[in-house]
Length: 392
Ligand code: DP6
Image 1 (tube, rainbow, N blue to C red):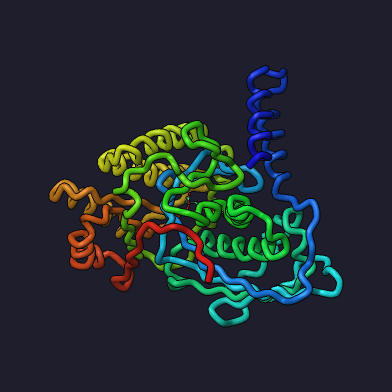
Image 2 (cartoon, helix red, strand yellow):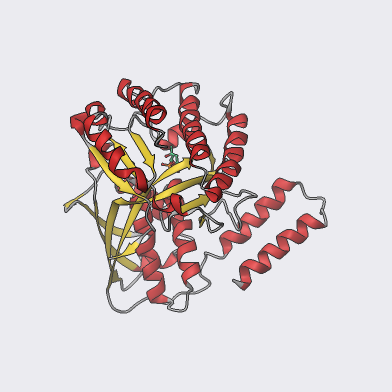
């Protein structure tokens, strides 16, 4: 806590006295200082094996992260609902080695079977976090992971998977260093998860998490997610999300390729400004309990994300005909019933329907009777806003 304050005061002083550094240099210096706090000055290796396990949820962005600089530094702030039903469960057995290996030594099992497909992503992740978790080379890791949702459902699993992995690593760190605070545990877990997949840093806690510096989010950072602790109207802390599985196929474009298409994109500067403005607007809407304002901003964000993909070079149309059918049905239903149900989209064809808990019965009946027809094999997943990762 004290350390953070010292850093903040130093940063404010730099800004206040207007040292002749350009602003970007001041931010780079601040960022480096903040990263330092996650590098352990020393660490002790356990002498006995230890097993840890965490379950972590997926999240759905209301203001979208689309565009980044290295490594997973977002071009604009984003904000998401943490979910609760779509989760990854991960356990890790850490076996101390007699001498450290040159890189992290691990075996990976996914849904009970040894898995080679995800290995490269995990190898990259361990390389990125090496400076922050130097102790990992002192163990042999057996990682076992599974999802609560079908792998081929088109639901992005990187957020839940990377956040679960990060929590497991932090639990090892806590075994080695029991004095670390709860705040540090969660902040560093979010920081590590971000290095695996940007949006994963928003899955550690809930119900609403912001990531990326923004003047309206106290203590916001590009390095990790922060819980939106400002007043949030209770209607938004029990929101429902039904994921309509329009297309269960492989992702047409990976997130990393998609984010990179924002470099040199004709509309990117404007988009980053728009996201910052939408964030300010949404924070106000969330505090007031303004469901109409919520619908407007959330749908605008979803369509802006897809507009960016449709106008990048190369361009991508990731919506399917049934995605559009659902969007039209949602708008017609809202007009007809006055129920403030709205849609949002990820970088794919599936639709997330967001609605207040108090309307759940009616909306679910409508989904079953009408919207299921637009889903592949009539499949959808009911989820709701949740509180983040849980120890298993
Ligand atoms: C459209 O977090 O998957 O879901 O940082 O490259 O792993 P990487 O990208 P990722 O991007 C998510 C993009 C999004 C919007 C969002 O979740 O904010």
